Image (cartoon, rainbow, N blue to C red; front, side, top):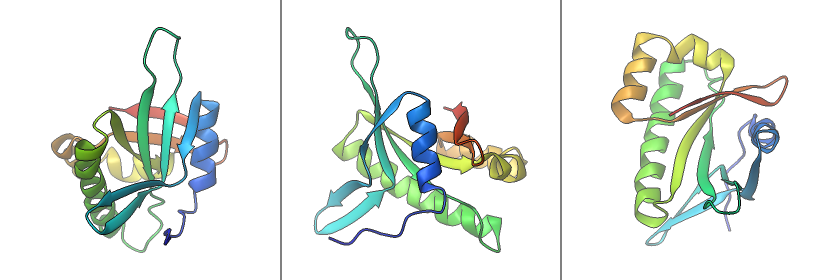
Length: 140
């Protein structure tokens, strides 16, 4: 089975989600459509009080360390839309998030282009601190 290379912040995001009370259930989360396999970086479930059903998420981790942050954004956006579309058909209870560093969020996603893309494409973000391995923000 082919599994793509992990993002440089893969372990950090796993640690941050675990600290935030999430249980990592898939590493990676395999999506299959026909004969094609794709892999979202992580699947996680947050266990809440016994009378509530657990929430499920999928997390695609992007480092945004390429020479062009716009090219990184284009690639992340395409992957996010592809995975979200497949998840809606195969696991509609699982919500997809894009995990990004705080520096990326401040440099790109608070800018008008980032805000516009997040709003138009309904992208959910997890903003994390790579030094402390902590989730700083959940952006619905």
